[in-house]
Image 1 (cartoon, helix red, strand yellow):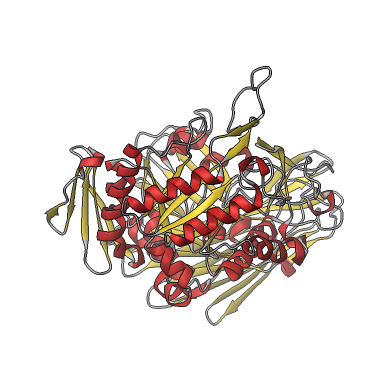
Image 2 (tube, rainbow, N blue to C red):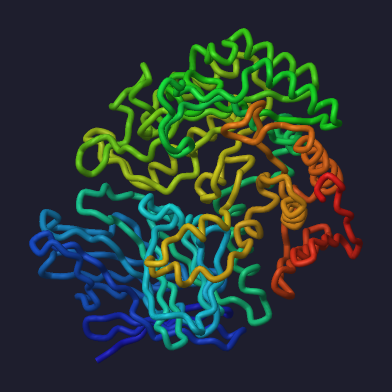
Length: 638
């Protein structure tokens, strides 16, 4: 015999049905007339160490169904495995909120059975229309015509499939969305298409992916909401996420930060230029090995050459620049991290670097560096294994090969103050000015299996935020790369929220690759006007895209060929054209919320900003229209 519990408000009603061995939920949205369900309340994935496999519990012992004024408190269990799990269901402002406090996860035979995942409301978010996936800047997938596939990935990424770049804790199917507002870094997105025109998105609360994983104590919270019938789904989902970022996570607007930070106010009007000096002929950036007799130290610019080229930049009429010197440290780019001193003598040493800073300051520029507080290399005299992430097999976790060799990663929560704030202060004392840039922050999330400072994915995210906040405190403002929301929250500027090349790099044998149909600016709609979004490229197409999305120009250059573009007169003319058009003429768009986006035809995109500015970019004909007026293409970008 089944019993039911009903609860809700005037915008959303829920019915919880208690059947033998299962709980089922139905949601009804009166405004849209839509009903979802009944679907199972949850499935639980449990690792059985005796069988060396994960089993999915679709039936369970029901220990408690407690009605509440605004919802219900549920406790389910499994007698043989001695597991128990509690959920709270509530309706708040027309949204279903599902909460799982870690205190209500019991594992009384943890030597044999451990809970891996609680899959919440499987099958609730189904559609024959479009899926919205939180990959890259946002992906829209039309379910029709898609093959039968099923895949799953962690929000904020996993190193094994870094190309997916799951930047945001939100997804949607048809006219419903799901948003992780608690424990986002411990949330898994499941996506499937059945090959017959139906697609499904499900969020799951992850506790472990592997047997030895540390478990994050943060309370998991998922919110489910209907999308109004007349709303654009991409825009609505983005704006719901933006409200979470501003109201719940308390990220200030860019306009607020400009009033607080003179350094950020200068950056808002300045071209960001990365000055690249040197790198060891090693790793991903420098494929192959140097020829016999060749130096492994690949130098493409010294400090004196950089100063001369900055004078050319100023003479060309670019009067505001923030520089980020790359490879100023021993052995160049990455080099000997975490060792920063002495400054590389082959480039001019500390005296040459201080002279470069003086030159830049005399031109009215702000001079800072490309720095890194996560990476560590064995060749560094400051290499300390006790501060590094350990892998699940007990060794140091090596991740990729860069200029310094195999990269190891600090567990940032354990960095002593003198190794973080103290070293940032020491670098600034050289005479640096302007917003800082911290490299390597926006990574897929890792766990730490160190025997003394074990940590979760959420802990890794908090450590990253600690580094960015420290740089922001010392320099007045700070930016980083890659748009994972956890890194975007403390940052004032972000290099990218995703890129097309990452999607194209996804191997075809990954099931989800078949669903990567169309990239959309969900990231920009959610976060624009909350931080500066940097735009790389010197072409007319890059300028069009920057104005379309309110982007900020950045570039990289050197004096000699071999690694980065050389600052020739031709390149300088392009930079000046970008400076005049993107910053001088349309730079005000950076602080405005991006309120609308649509694509009337293939290759044509229209956006609208909070002040009413409407931008249409016709990439087919390479035409840009702002408020009905055609923007002339600068001659330098012809």
